[in-house]
Length: 231
Image: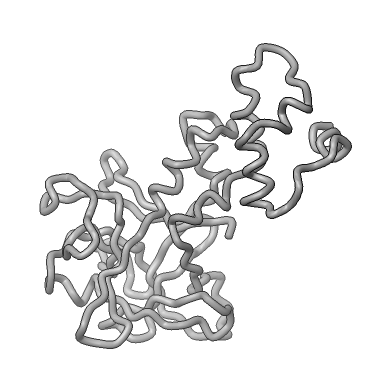
């Protein structure tokens, strides 16, 4: 995937949910769009979600921002096996309509606000391994990505002309390193070199070798391949 569901605490606005690519995040970061490993982990930490499964209905859950703390948790991130935390929520504010509202982040303890924070997880009928998230108490309303960065709750009918996407892929957080970019690895290998770095030395760097072996699943490039990449 190119875009990821993310969250943050925005000064003056409170907690927010949105959808963003790494390139979009770089453009608004303190790194000024530069590709660097320093922004890799913070980007993905803000994508980490956890599911609190509910016994009332099959596949009903709450979707929690795993890295954000609340008053209930004394500012600490929510722990597995503990209810509460900041949950993705369907709450219509005064300036919004029932047909189009932003996904909110709402604090809710066990049993609270269930009409807003409970969702039903449904398999996508179109994409293998993807899922839809329907508001449990508002049939036909789904979490949706609206380009370029909106995360909304909208009524959805298949085969409609809406530009919203309601099918989402779930990825184990441990696999985030599969989304590291080659330029990030190469820059890190060369960052302490004052002038030119010999290509043979670059190819011997442990992180460069691990990238080709573990991420690309391929032998490290020949010299000609690197020359083409850098040209």
